Length: 176
Image (tube, rainbow, N blue to C red; front, side):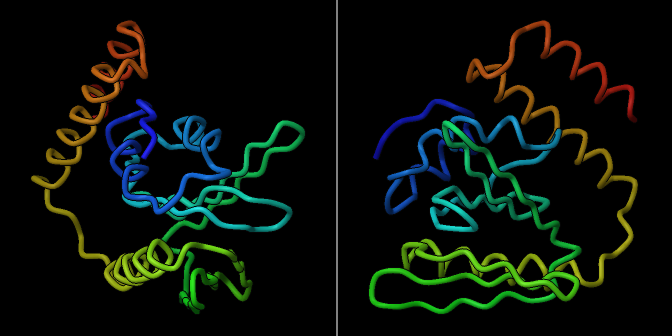
């Protein structure tokens, strides 16, 4: 598999892809659409709307990213808005249907192994997110710790400059 050197979480997820064909540009651009503290758990390639793109399941949402030369597309599905997920697989690939607020998004031509694993993990996310428990004060400290750890990884990977690191670190610590 190709090495991307984008960010440790993205590199790890990209390394598990069956194929990166048609998604290399999207993998490189993925950090631009991620929220602060958001980490990538799984990736898959597929077709949604008008073209091939990258499906990224993060710690907070499902994102479809297409970054072509002439057009770009980003659509996200926060876990709290997803009501159900349907996977239908064929011999080599399948389709993932995501139902949100009466709407249906269908991502097609996802490699079978990637799509099934992503659908299963997505179901787990929305099942556990259906009735969130109040977070204890310790959880907030762990969240800050994980945000700082992610920030350290970004700096170590060269994804952010030392100045950006210091600015973001200050913002995280001031949020306590």
